[in-house]
Amino acid sequence: MTRARDLPFNRENVLKVVSTHADEIQGCYESAMARRGATAKDAPSGRVLMSWVITPDGLAAEVKVAKSAIGDSLVTDCMVQAIRFWEFPKPATRQPIEFPFDLKPTNGAKTPKKKEAR
Image (cartoon, rainbow, N blue to C red):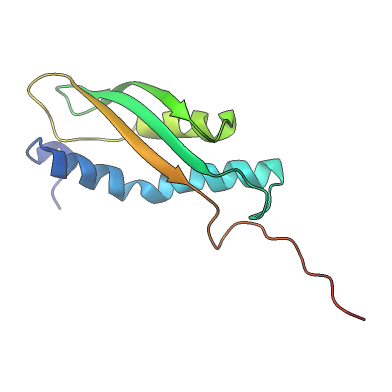
C-alpha cells in the first residue's frame, strides 16, 4: 500500500488524503452534537473552512479554523486536532491549504423519539 507521503504532490492527491479522512471529520461533528444533546432536527449544520500548511515533510502545520458557520468549539477543536495528524504528499516547499467541510446530521444522528398514539 502506498503511503500518502510517497505520492506526488498535486491537488488530486491532497484531495485523496482529505477524502480518506471525511468520516473522521464527520465523527467530530456527530460526537460534539451527541455531547450537546442535539437532535438531527436541531443540530446546527453548515460549512467549516479549515486552513493549514503542508510542510516539506508532508505534515499539517498551523491548522486553524478560517471560518465556521457551525460556531461550535467542540466540533472545530476536534477538527483541528484530527488534521494535525494527517499525512500528505511531500511538497517541495510549504503549501498553504484551505478546505471547506460541509457538516450536517447523518443517519447516525440522534433523532427525537416519536410518541406512540394510544
